[in-house]
Image (cartoon, rainbow, N blue to C red; front, side, top):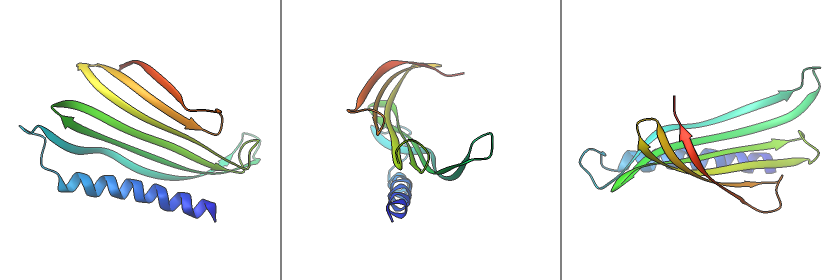
Length: 130
């Protein structure tokens, strides 16, 4: 039952981002706007190299650009796993705020929530795009 709640949540996040982005004004010449880059949900069956069943994964990726005086990208990535690891159910969720500085360089802040860490993790860094 929890599997279906996660699928419903993932689908709701992607549909909400798509719906919000359609109703906003275009970015050109505006102070505020939102534009979708990618919003995806993947359903995966996991099998290791020897053919052993490693469970199921639902992966959600929502990457949307927005402008609030200047350009940013907001990224949401999440993996929800069942029967894959030492825990029956686990998850990894990453929220990122990216600020382009010059053509191929951005500043990046990420906040990570997972069953692998006892508390959320903050990451600060530089992103190079090729």
